[in-house]
Image (tube, rainbow, N blue to C red; front, side, top):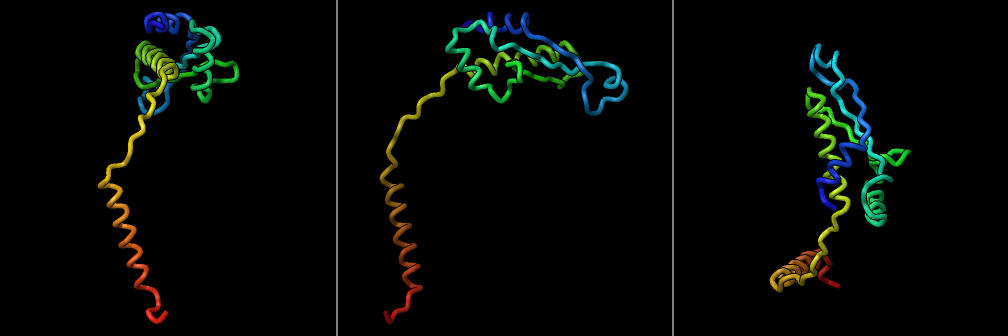
Length: 136
């Protein structure tokens, strides 16, 4: 899936709510609604069914009861910038949910590591052996 198409879909289909940001900021923060909450309906994602299911499975903890991906942004004092940040975050979340993790290539431990482990076991055994009663 092309990221430009996905970016356009997020921009057009996302429902955006604005509210007042928390934290310090004086009069500006008390008067302006710069915090952005982006709601994306996952069912209407322009993806094949298998990929949609993968996104839903990976992002289950971020979905609300209406199966919407909810993202908030209040980093900036600008409403437009916060909206861009939220849309970018949504894009990266969906892309990361679609990517498959790289499979681990199995390797053997080096011979030196194995010898160190065995040497440590011998030393430990000797230390514990000194604690025994010598008459037994």
